[in-house]
Length: 323
Ligand SMILES: Nc1ncnc2c1ncn2[C@@H]1O[C@H](COP(=O)(O)OP(=O)(O)OP(=O)(O)O)[C@@H](O)[C@H]1O
Ligand code: SF4
Ligand SMILES: [Mg+2]
Image 1 (spheres, helix red, strand yellow):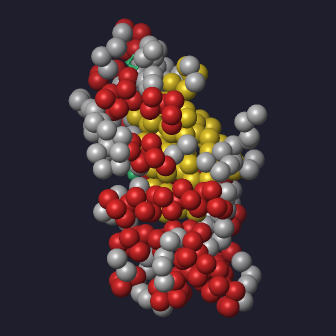
Image 2 (cartoon, helix red, strand yellow; image 1 turned 135 degrees about the vertical axis):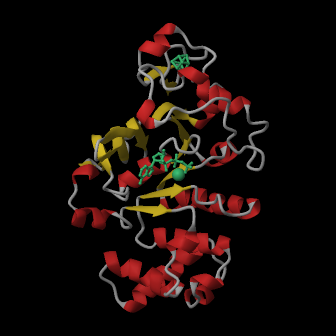
Image 3 (cartoon, helix red, strand yellow; image 1 turned 120 degrees about the horizontal axis):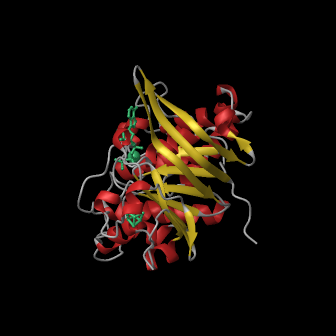
């Protein structure tokens, strides 16, 4: 029997609202993150991956962006309905986020130790000694070799890889149930990328956490994730177990992405944009958003918006799924 999802995003829409402006950017997105799994979210630049992730913790820029529909259930509580104070209690403690650029996320005025112990004390009533112990353990858990030395260093003294591990340690200090990692390794060299992703996967197993991993790299998906969701123009167009989706993609967009990737290994599998232009969120067609780029397009595709439906063992948003 499948367990209940830990995080259940249902029909989420996030839109831009302002003077004479009103359209959704993330549209009707449903994603489930189950206990102890890595869910990868992939898709071309601008398809709404970060906006979806940010809105989980109410970190989207608001105004001008608002959640315009749907719900985000975390252990049965709808996060979209939480007060700012209750959201702060969830953020960092239950669900933590790791961003792409650690240098801009780590405050240069403080040592690593101060950053970590402050994060501990924000959510746990513990003594300074215990906060330090938790912080050193988190540094070790994030794969840092000499936690005591790093504890006293400032962010500018760290390499990119070590900074990203400090970010992961910051995410770990309050033992969250979920880590959302938005392209956590894009800025790093390939070897360090692989080490950090391996560590995230090990942490999932050791701590029983769930990870939502946003990435451009299908090789990373193949080696790290259990399930995956493919986004296109603000919507999920295909989702399912990684083995199923990569072996037999049913959406023409996923199919196109995979045929553009020569080999599924982490060095040669950056997502290659396929031909044609992605429609802007304020000029979406009535039917399928992929119609102008799709070689299987029919009249029905142009007039009728396809719903996300079960097809074989995955979910696909297409009137004519690839067999
Ligand atoms: N603060 C904002 N104001 C207006 N539009 C925004 C804002 N933030 C994001 N957008 C728009 O929302 C869309 C989705 O952006 P998002 O950052 O979620 O894309 P992404 O899939 O994460 O892309 P990338 O792979 O480049 O990180 C883009 O078209 C972007 O221009
Ligand atoms: S609905 Fe039609 S246009 Fe859209 S992806 Fe499927 S076949 Fe292509
Ligand atoms: Mg992004």
